[in-house]
Image (cartoon, rainbow, N blue to C red):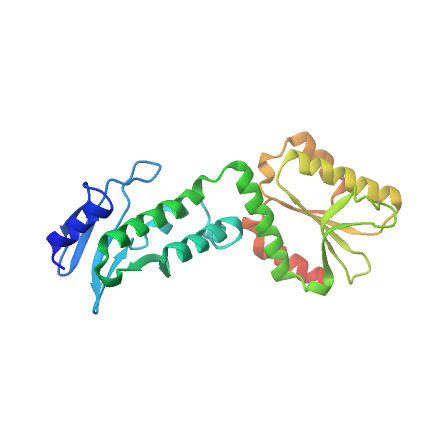
Length: 257
């Protein structure tokens, strides 16, 4: 298909404002009217590899996301699920950070339409609401413990079924197999910290023998008085999961050994 016909297909299927700009042999910049939230244009290239034409963002989309998010935030939890589902839905390939979509049967317009939709949906993960980000933290926390602690030695959302059959005082994860079990709390808000404080104090009243660990989403966001009261009853704390994965892993290894 000629360049003129490709542009015509783009106009019919996507937008009259789409145009192609040559950047070398069998390589074109695809200029579209579509923008990221900050006003920058999407980066799209149409190029030929062997006998296949494909659309590529040349790793621009993920690079932009890492301006606001750590790379690990894109590889775990809710954000990772959204990205994976989007790639699958729009048949986009992730080649070490470069997003590509082969053009099937000269369907250039349909391919560009799908590619643009996919890129915009992936870019939206950096604008998740505060509530969705918290759910991402909880997912990341559970996945991290899945990877770090053998299944037989961990119980999520644990409570003392004898003293507390209604589960009013629970911990996000209980690690067993030691002289004293380890109670782990995932803390993303002042409310969660207050609840954890009350729970640990109740465990002390019951005379339970245990160790305690808190992993914060962002400790600096917690009210100082709330954090001070919690620090009085919690034995070990890490200010965030993202920045302390290696330290937490070593701590858990020491506890499990």
